[in-house]
Length: 437
Ligand code: GUN
Ligand code: FE
Image (cartoon, rainbow, N blue to C red):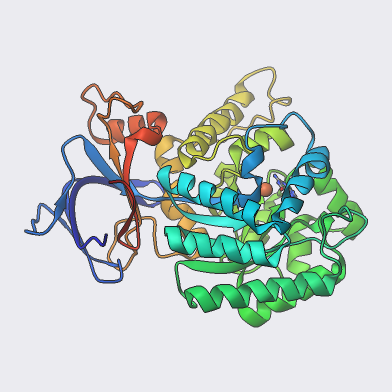
């Protein structure tokens, strides 16, 4: 069902530090779902009018998802990263050679993500070309805006025989095959786009990383990977290459505009500048960082230097598929980091004197911030952007928001802190309804 005009009580955060409330706005779209007018107080006879008690916000952008890991969400997170990968994650991802298994999981995941208000996502798939193509087809048919990559991992010293690319050439050819397939089914600026996806430096040979860098330069396709995630991973790369992760990605030609690197808990100030200067961004995965890194990404520092940053669930390195939860964890982790400096435990808690991130900032990161990192024309209600949005019923008894008369930014804050899936009543991408009756 295509929307042409909607009247609503709406909020968005088009720029860092700027949340805007529209108490009664008319948003008009063209036939492609692009916003053509945003007018406070205007009316249109054909407008869909959201009922009192409902608010409209931009859809969320999840900058880091491992789609194949959905079956193990919320389990085995007591292990260190390297054990978790070898004993749980690689055996699970190997199962996506089976397209029936892939279809069941991917279809459930994309439906659930949309129902949670995640209208855009950056997905890692697996090493398998057919299953990665299938994920792209499911995103396209269900209507999730998605950037998707076949995982490249070819180093026999780091990856098990049952789950790795047979050679660097296989990893690069498979990546190219997925890029071609996605361009064929979605077009070059369609709802779904490809990403070059080296899993992380420890899993790839130099030959593979150089080849993927060349492919990125040739095709202009975005890159995604993990960067400076844990002490173990960070140390491993330094020992193997003599460089930091960020310097290594730059060396291989993989630091590029609109590319996104997950975690970054151990990025130095100069690493952050290197990412920023190449137009790359960071997926901040606060929950997963707590489990695997035992640390908090220096988000305030990243924002202060103008490094593109958005939020990621890291399904299944984090235990929750909702960007509402990622925003809550972002705020909580930031407050712990900021408070540490006042206490005796400062050093142990990795505390700093940085001011904490508030929910309004997390809202920007969950919407326009994530979109900007990927160069997607979404995340705010502005002319020229695509209409990706969700309607939230703040009064729904089955939901978890109890407004008690809150208004303005206090209402928005309450919604962001307390909403749950039953509160999300309609979800649109490209102006087409994807969730709701
Ligand atoms: N590093 C390499 N692979 C992974 C993964 O699947 N999840 C996380 N969190 N980190 C990784
Ligand atoms: Fe990850």
